[in-house]
Length: 97
Image 1 (tube, rainbow, N blue to C red):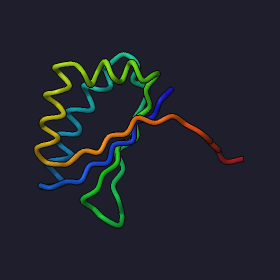
Image 2 (image 1 turned 135 degrees about the horizontal axis):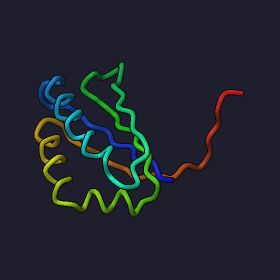
Image 3 (image 1 turned 180 degrees about the vertical axis):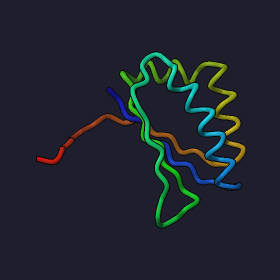
């Protein structure tokens, strides 16, 4: 499993970003290898959102981001926010006892 950490700095209206995000997330949820995501908003800087998504493997994620359908979704998001994606692997994880 891999984790995508994608920071978005919204340049326009937050409501536009959230609306576009919801449409785009439906597309992503249907892709092979997609496991889950959370979109969180910074309390210190309300223009910053962070997507934390889990994928079965890097290849599944790369296949989706290389598709023409994804390019349409990311173009819509990039019109209202600046993305900073990073595909990561878990090094240490803990859960409550």
